[in-house]
Length: 150
Image (cartoon, rainbow, N blue to C red; front, side, top):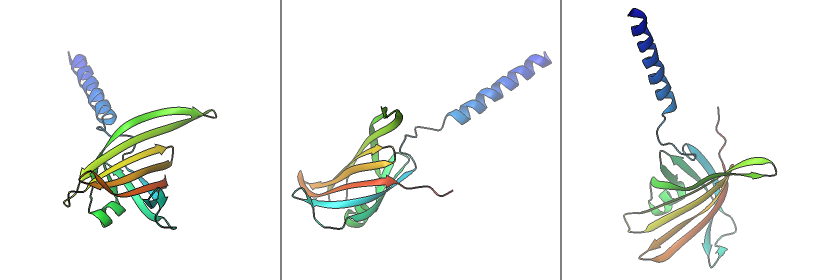
């Protein structure tokens, strides 16, 4: 009887321990990633300035944050959705491709739509701002994942 109780306790402990370590929530492949961007404001299909702006795009807990969108347009953390998460092979090497989008409105009733495509450590995408279905600003960006310091 004592041996059976010990076995049940050990089995229960193993199951609980395994479930705690294997369940980390609904974290996606972009969670806790930061990308350093070169951002161009576009006008008539061309960059408005010769020198791109620098930005950091941070993904955390299902939300995305951009310094440019906060500083210039008062957008804070925006909920995003992964629209594609796949792997492919290029020259015998496995590559990871993620596409995501986010949209919300600010207090000025401006709509921002963010689209990103992350291919390995590289990112490209757009911030599109509109008001009453009229595009006000378009930013295009490229960049790389920020190296985490250990």
